[in-house]
Length: 419
Image 1 (tube, rainbow, N blue to C red):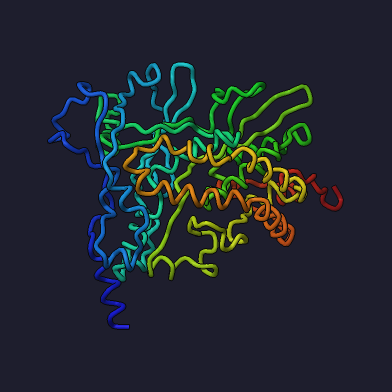
Image 2: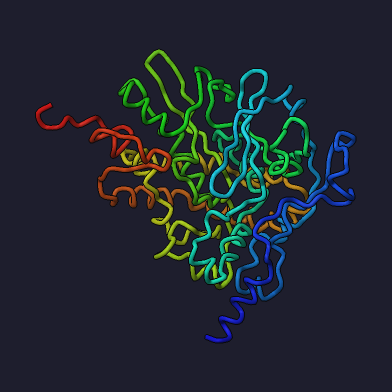
């Protein structure tokens, strides 16, 4: 036990920093540069996760090399980007810093930082024991460039996505007082999954809304608003293929379509930080397991524990889907995600990054695709075993729903006695 504790604190003590941004390479003092004289820049996404053999043994190899590998990306100035961007608001979740903008047509975009800041996720007890680096270093299990390949895979699979692009955003006048936190950083520029102007090009699309707004609209429109269940089934089974375990309700937008028979909501998956998630090492595997965190699963050739990946989101939106619907969606994905489609999706990765992780990830994708019908059958079985109960989706905790719609999206309201 004594040796184990020595190795634990040796590993955790290697890095005192809790947050770093990207490192600009080969250009000298970044603060004195006029980036308008350049069209691209070479950066390492984050060197925070570089580690000795002790740290790799205790906390895993993960995607440390990918985070530190130099890549060349275009430089973006907000006053000229997409015809000139207008700032709307700051955003982001528990780890990601983000900014929301709109272009002259009113289409909304988000800049999502590649560097994560999980400080808010560190429990007080972990700080008291000097264990905060377990959480900080856990980001290295996320692949920094997963979103690029997932967008291409989504395109091949016929699934909506937010079209992420890598950009470096220098400190600039358009950011004003936000420069200190947001300037000179590496971002994904992507469409926002919520906004009054459609960017999907789907006929009949009138706006994009979040899950809470969708639930409220369902109460108002009732049967006049239907879910595109086929699209959602395909998207959720696609999540299994790419190993994206973090798919709560706030990770989805919805395209609202208006037609002669009413309204239809089509899902837009967002935030692919945890696609290809690869966690190894002694400490992460002690913390995340079937008992403590069953949803946190590494992207291996097969799915080790599917019940951990079935969420309340699925019970709410897909609880009434038949086994045949699940199997049809799985067969559709198998037909679209050919070996050639999977291989071609990674052409967007820089060669240096692809040589590190591409072959293994592609092999695992093909293995999961081959088994997706069996996973779909098991998914349906797990859903069927879940008890019927009121569900509070992430982001909708304060939403008051009547009995019936509080259990599933397509459940009819149940009148209370005496009403």
